[in-house]
Image (cartoon, rainbow, N blue to C red):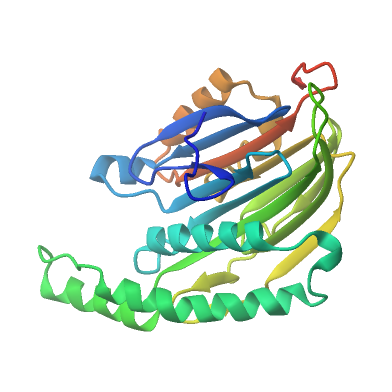
Length: 288
């Protein structure tokens, strides 16, 4: 199990941007998560960080779970910085939101304002990061221009799930879900093995959050009662080829498919968050 967060009522599960990893964990009774993070072929060969970053935070009492999956924009300056910075902020923001009935009516506008204010502080931090010194002058000029005029950018998909706290020995009952996103991180909410709701903007190449410009493009929010939800998958575009099949792949098969993708010369960083619920008799649901 991930370690307790000593200063709060939450526990944290997150990816490491310099180490490729796969984790399966029981977050709360009846809720199983798989979290996968692999750098692309080029990043592995050149010891570069993963541009993706994912964080999951869940209450120790089992009443709520918040998550964020970010995909840093590789054409920006240090996209990995924006991914980590924004995911950490959004998870904390989701943690502190009131229950659904008490949330602001114009939540998109509230969040957009907060993300634009975050950008100002994040750009200041980005400017203070040490820049590489062992590069030609022309390259250094390009990097300086990227940093100052474009900043670090990322797309994201985040969400919060609220549960009815279970009685002793019984699985928690999922109640409501809130999801927010910009750009082309993909999520699927499975109501059963054959039916799912597709969220995220798979073809959106412009929507993103920038430390220099704040929100660029459309910010989306979506919420509803999810008592019938059986599974949730979220993945970055490096896993588009296997995204729809994620729920059918066991751990070993999923890792084998990742290794196949890594052999491709145009492979991209890959991150996936797969959340499943157990049945009333505490047997994990397995789909084939």
